[in-house]
Every structure is written in C-alpha cells, then in structure tokens.
Image 1: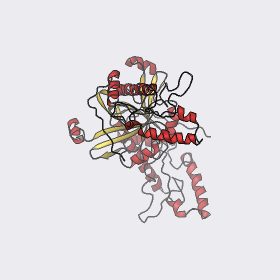
Image 2 (image 1 turned 90 degrees about the horizontal axis):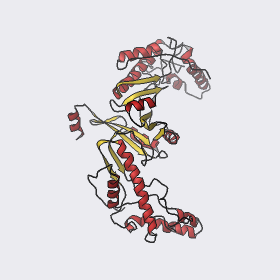
Image 3 (image 1 turned 120 degrees about the horizontal axis):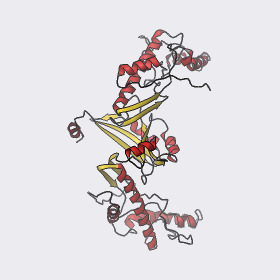
Image 4 (image 1 turned 30 degrees about the vertical axis):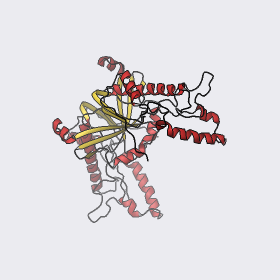
Length: 220
Length: 220
C-alpha cells in the first residue's frame, strides 16, 4: 500500500513522521535507545520513518493546529486527568466511597456519577485538543479499556480493583495502612461502555465515528 | 514581532513547534522534565510552544522533506561523524600522529589534510541532510567552534588538546596508559577557519551564505 501511494505521489520514497507521546516523567531515554538501531531516520523498505518524542499530557494540546494526519491512542484514554474523580467527598470532607477504590456494587450512586462525569470531562478535553491538531479529513484510531456491560459496577470492569481493595483493607486491618488512605483513594481510571464513548464523542461534535466495536482480550 | 506576525496571519495565537535533537544515547528525560513546567504545550504570552525531542545523528536525515522553517545548530557541527578522521594510520597500520591527539605544530602535513578532509565530508553530509529538510526560503543559523587563524595548528585552536596530549603522555610515561592508545587516539572534532566553512558551503551549493562572522568567546 505504501509503495502504491509512493507511485501515486511520484516520489522515490514515502516519508513518515511519527510522534510518540507520554508524560514528561516517563522514560524516553530507553525508548529512544531501543528505536535508534531500528527505525530512527532509517529506511524501512521504501519508507523513511522519522521518530520523535513528545512529552506532555494528552488531555491538553501537544501539537500545532492542523499538523497530524493520523492519531492513534492505544490503551490510554481510560486514564483520568485528575488524580481521582472530583466529588468523592461530602461537603463535610467525608469519603463517599469508603473501603473501596473504584465503583463497586456497594458504592453509593454518586460514585458512579462522579466517575462518569470526570471521564466525560477528561475525554472531551482529549477530543477537543486532538480536533485542533488533526488536519481536515485526518483520522483517529482509539483503543481504550472499556466494558461490554451497561453496569459500571459489573465484575467485568471492577474485578481487579475489587481484589486490590480487599488486599488494601487487609493491610488496614493489620495497621500497616491508615484507614483514611484507603477511604480517600480512588483509582484515576474509568472503563466506559461503548454507549458512553459514543455519547461523549457525539456531544463533543468535533469527530464523527466511522467504526466502533468492543472486543474482549484473552485472559492470561 | 511575534504579535505583529500573529495579526498579519489573523490568528489568535502563534504556534511554534520546536524540535530538540541529540544523539539517542543522551539524556532526553532530564531535558523533558526541565521543560515540562515551563514551555511544553504552554502559552508563553501570545505564543504557544510545542517542544519535541528528536533522537539521531545530525550527520544524517532527521526530518521529512520540506518540514523545517528555521534550523539552528549551536556549538555542534565541529564534531566529526567518525570516531577519528580517516587516514591517520599508514598502510602498514602505524599511527601517523604519534604522541598527539589533534593537529599539532609537529604533526606531519597529512594530519591536517586528514582532519580537513573528514570535516569537509561530514559537514557536507550535514548540509545535504538539512537542505532536504528545510522548506524553500527557510533558513539556518549555525554557531560552531572554529578559528580565526588560517593555520590549523595555531595555539588558538590547539591549546586545549596540546595540554591534554601532554597530560596523557605523562600517564603513558608512568605506565598507566598504553603508548599505543595515545598514538592512535585523535580527537573527533575539527575547528575550521571561516574560509574553510565558506568553501565547503559554496562547493556543496545547497545553501547560500547571507551573513558570516567569527567572534571570540571571553576566556573563563
């Protein structure tokens, strides 16, 4: 396909510029060393590939306007921008998701509302930033962790966090961790349903969905 | 000036994309952490500045064709691409710059020829790569270490290396370093004269010199 495009554009080699984004605190050095012998500035068959690192949060702007043809985010946008969703403490400062670290069957309804609301806010920021950076007729391929069930407290998406909450509660009971730390900690991640993602994309309006599907990963 | 350009282009904020290049083995992590609180994706007055890291050797291609408006290289292109200039051993494999690590008053003429020839080759590679990457009417600002004297063995450019060669020779005399290591080591750097730089740029032909000057740095 690349070679065909090359001939269409009447150029000897097709050139790709690839930006790899992560937070500034992550390890770009190892990434760059691993890349250097393979693809940095090297020709791969008929394609020259130029790879760069972009430090910053994908919840904000990372690139100039109209500069990206294809955006791909893999297994990332289910992470929230905030350390934890807003609204998980009462007016009196009391934890509303006591003994749990994510949406749980026993969590009050306000917990699932706070998570969805925060995901809505953060995912909209992501869409807004990318919509300014993508060229007209550019496209985006997103893969994120979600759920097939409409119930956000379904074990499908909560199983890991339920287990972790039980483990932390055990450490609390042994006096190794303050109870308050467990009560106020909430995982900064939300696993949306397909309908929730669709709803946010449509409300935001800057992208149109061409194709959308849910798939299950094989268990380890 | 930025604000004026903004008004001319009728855009609310001017956006700059800045690429920082270094070899893949260098420390981009510290660079990115230092930048993150200041300029990454942040507005600086009326200018949004997007900073990226580009790992690779500037002696080869680093960017797609026609993608850079302004290229700046500071204190770098006097470094050679090779570990040492080619041609500094005889056919029999004997070192031709014995006891020295750079061009010296006592070095045979072939040493200065080998250095100039290697610089010519490497600087031409640099110019060739950048000329493909720069947009038409783009420009380049180069600052490199050179010399004012026409004589490459003048103390102006050799002083540091002469001192270092004496220090290494002392270690050799104490048996701490093999003599062969001193004899075969040559600094992979060349400090050209203005005339040499001008000659190489003109022979290469891909850039035109608008302005060129030599200046002395204050001594420490």
